[in-house]
Image 1 (cartoon, rainbow, N blue to C red):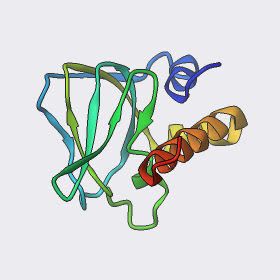
Image 2 (spheres, rainbow, N blue to C red):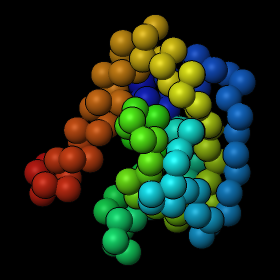
Image 3 (spheres, one colour):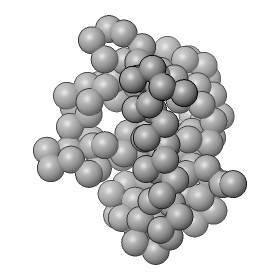
Image 4 (cartoon, one colour):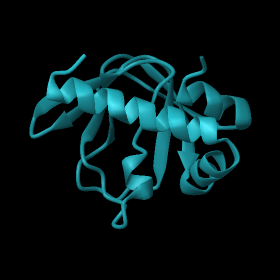
Length: 123
């Protein structure tokens, strides 16, 4: 089964690729966001109130909340736990994938649901 990040990379083989060293702040909570990311290599911590609430692993996506919320603000701070390679998707590409590939939308929803379950202590 393809992960959301893999699907995005399939559709946009010309995604802008960003490489960041461990410790880099990718975005901060409360900032306006115009990009989401597909994690190609590495690990990223999502932090809320100075607590790591989740670690994102290769092939998953993060930062999509800012693309769908009316005020486009970030809910967490994302910091590279390791050296990372990420593909960037703007809102236009995100909307295209949701419209043209319902499987992408389902996989993003699954990813978010899995994260929510982990936060609730479910398996």
